[in-house]
Length: 115
Length: 220
Image 1 (cartoon, each protein chain N blue to C red):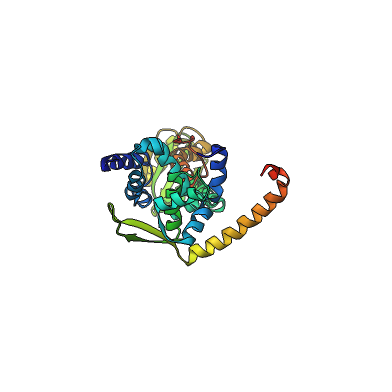
Image 2: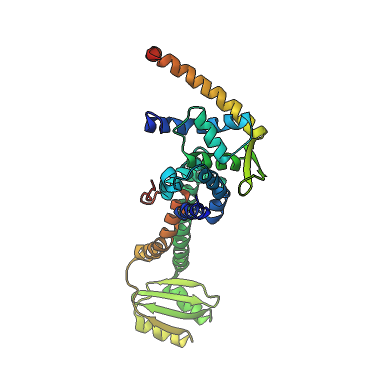
């Protein structure tokens, strides 16, 4: 958990889909790799189960394609990647998100003084 | 991390989601074990310490899975318009059933309303058009050869009536006097019907999500 863990977790709920889509847009990944990459990019509070559930839902809703890849250690890995639906969803969500962050930046203007 | 820990943990997550329908659960947990294998491979710390109790893991997983979109099969339960449509249809059905029963009872009664006078009855009886005459308290009903029922007004003295009918070769049937009034006769079957259909209607409404059963226990 990062600083302000509970607050961050709450905020993350709304944008986890977008974060997962963004990670997969970069390159296809299997579940735990997605978790790892989200955490590496600074979303340290992201829950393993949340990512797994999000992946399954996005896959279920047709935004992700999946395929099995043999791995060196242990069984095959299920890789997820964006399909056209997923890419369109990412575009839409990213636009919406950028709108929100711009508004939030304006609203919170001046609070970043300590940066 | 042993493979058994992963199996155990996955099995407990699965058990915590037992209230999902099996197909949805299988879809959700499709590659959970493989996923947990990856998590386990990274550290020697037991899964439960890293991921928390399986029950909370299951709750978090389900919350993330259900966020935003719901399973297609259940989507209609979320749509307020459809929900009210189901509610309206159910109530309509209930009202229609009550009206049907009420109408049927009223129908039997209105047949009796095609009344004959005592003179008509005697005339028809002599002409051999009357099958039988039923006497129940003050009410006298003549049943003609085609089975149609006719209330007889001012049938008068029952002894005289019986003599006239017997002479005409019409059977007399005596029944106990009817108890209660018209409304009791119409309302009672309706109440029984409501008692039978009510739970069905409530079940449909609960399934439709219009009525909410007491809050289900939430995990985590």
